[in-house]
Length: 109
Image (cartoon, rainbow, N blue to C red; front, side, top):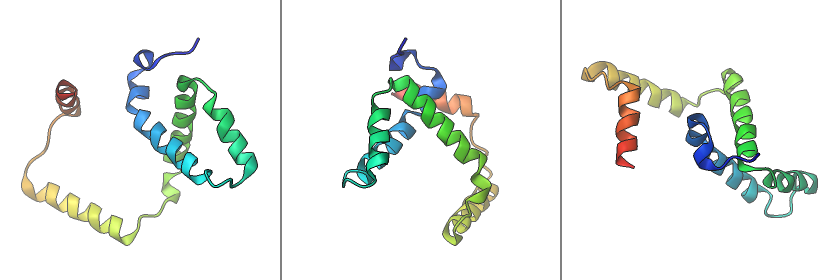
């Protein structure tokens, strides 16, 4: 039984942006008739129910997160992370609890 977006778990709803990014990446990459077999695979993936496509993206995303140690940071990324950490440590503002911040964002939507 296919699920609609309102029935998906909170985890899945938060990942719909990732689904769109990956979907549009593949559409753009294969728009020029590149790699016919891969294009066929993408077309077959489009026929899956959205809940199934989201599950596949979650699995793909989890595999990337698992292998993230193999992704080296650029010098610019490392410098930005250092800058943000220095700013966090020096301003004395410790932020808010994530649940409160998320609830505040949801109230504004």
